[in-house]
Image (cartoon, rainbow, N blue to C red; front, side, top):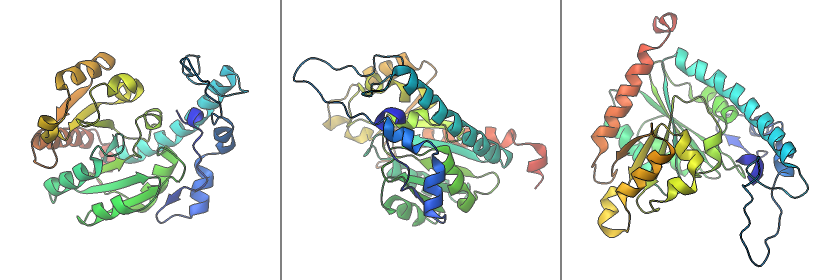
Length: 292
């Protein structure tokens, strides 16, 4: 997680916000992040298992206990922001989905196809997370859907404070669907609650069926797995049944859908899943808010 990778937040940029303020306020423990950056050197042989201690990592000159304390402090602050985001979204009956994957799994393409299929029946908004550029947000805005770009700079994930700033400007309408496209990374984003209703992890068939074993925290945290780019199955060595078995071994409650955004195969089931989740969120909306 972030306390091991040491990612920085000072250069976070949220469209429409004071950039310096957003980046500085996002993490009061930025120096702890830097202090935790792993500067160890590998030897010539053997296996270095830096995740074997109770902190799940190793930093030269820092005890496991100190690492755990800093991790807990960072996550506690994030969880407080996430709780505020969740209350804000649920009060307005907004379904928020946190879309997670490694780079290149097809998140943005799926978002564009999903938006096109749901419009105009469903009001949508998107928060785009990338280390640099506004390319993905521009692709979303081309569909007519409002989007806010969050550039995390050196940061390898979105956090709840960044999302809160984005919500200030995006202001998704009551009863809408908010899609949060996280930074492409199967490690750190798993640990950071953004205030979403569901975590959706995408895994493309070009990545290998062993990814759930390599990144178990992500698949354990997810509510739904989308196995994407299934149109490429005839051209890659990918064991779908084995991937599903490994993912369910880590998270027996994990829902799994297969699809291809390019051909449309499996898209109806994904759209139905969103509509069902959307309906549940709207039904659970407080009656006082529903009367707006």
